[in-house]
Structure formats: C-alpha cells, structure tokens
Length: 306
Image (tube, rainbow, N blue to C red; front, side, top):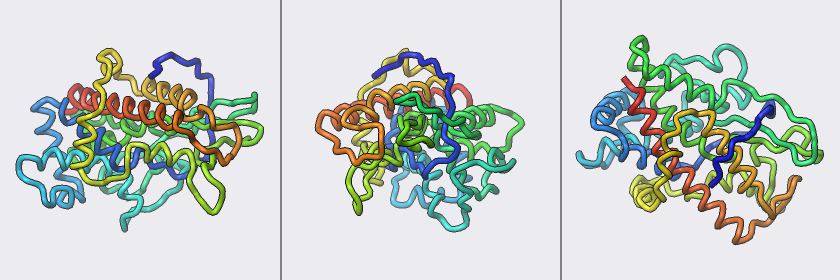
C-alpha cells in the first residue's frame, strides 16, 4: 500500500456516472471495524443519534439486545446508498447544481446527493487536457459534517443525519475509484472513475468501477461482514492516525493509479480481461483501505462528536 504524497495541481470531470462506493458488504465492514475502536461515550452518543434516523426500526429487526447497537451502526453506513432506491428521495443528478447541493438540514433533506460520494481528481495517460472538479464532493462533505457533529450549535437531528453520512463517506473516500477520473485522447472527458472502462464485450455490462465496488463481496448481512471484518489486516498505527480527509483521498488517488489502472487495464474503454495477478493485488489493496477507513472513522467520531 502506498502513502506517497502527490503533487496534485489537478482538476476533474464535470459530470460522473452513478457511484456506489464499496458495496453494502464493504460499508458494513468499515463500520464493524469502527465500532470496535469507539470509546464507550462515543458508542452511547452514536446509539442515541442513530435512533433519530427514519430507517432505524428496520436496522434492528431480528437483533438481540447485546448486538443491537453495533448492528444499527453497521447498517447506518449503508443508508446513503439505500436512499437511492427508496421512495420519497429525489435523484438530483450526479453533478451538483445550486445552493441545495451543499445544504445541511438533516432529515428534512430528501435529495439523494449522489455527488457527495466521490471526487474525481484526474490524471492523464498521454498529456490530454483534464477538467476541473465539481463541488460539493466527498472531501468537502466529510469536512463539513465532521465540523457539524462537533458543534454545540447544531441540532441532534442534523448531527444524526451527518453521522450516518460520515459513516458512509469515510468508506467512500477510501475506495480508489471514488477519488479519480483518468483522461486520455481516447477518453477526453475522463472515464468517470472507471465507469466507462468495460471488462467484457456487450451485452455484458461489467465495468471497472463496479468491479472495485464489489471486490469485498456483495453479501448484505451484518453477520457475513462481521466475519470478514475480523479477518482484515490491522492498519499501520501511523497511517491510522492520519485525520486529514484530503490525505485519505490522495492515498486513494495514488492507489487508483497503481492498482485500479494497472495492467491489463489500458487507456481506452476496453474491454479488458482482468487476470489473477490483477485480482489478487486489487483485493489486498481493497482490504487494507477498508481496514484503514474503519479505524479512521472511529478516530474521527471519538475526537469530534459531542
């Protein structure tokens, strides 16, 4: 895993395809790791805030008293993806438009805010021009929500909403293809974080971004995620203690270049067939990123939430 700093005098694509971050299993794993690193006071505060979420009752169905709080915390991490298919939430597009794009009004907000899930820091493989990033994005929102949950001026309704989003976005920030878009003469408007890179010929629809989203598994049960989380490697302490979300994203950008776009991925639309070496390296990197995300999420909550 690389933590080399990057000189990012760079900009990103103006619009992007739908982004899901890690699939549910990956987000459940991030939250499972985080829960185990929360202090007692943080767990109590988190539990109280999560009860304000409109889906809380569904999160605790069929849970025992002893596991209920942890399972609710884990399922909360999937909520910002769940609202993409729930009735009553508006798809306001993948490009932020207007003042409502960055608003923070709690559960009165029924926009899906899909553009909060990523930031497409670009790079070019052949000197092609790149496009500037849009905002708000995953970096701006982690910063804003962390500030809000640490403020005495913010209501618990808003803190609950922001906490759930933070659980999710810290995971998204550690998914390499949520941090970049690759430009080339073949893809002059960028590949939208690998969404435009095919892994098979039509009518097959497999593509690079969703390969990375699903790499940790697609099981949506907390039990499976708990078992997988217990097998994750412990992250290096110095890396886990990094609290700057911009550094997390630059790490993901670096990981995308070194792992997601490694051979046999070329600089066009494909299709490309992933070999065993690619898959093994990608899975190892994804597991390390998720383990880091979990500890960093816990550190953020422990140090910020009031």
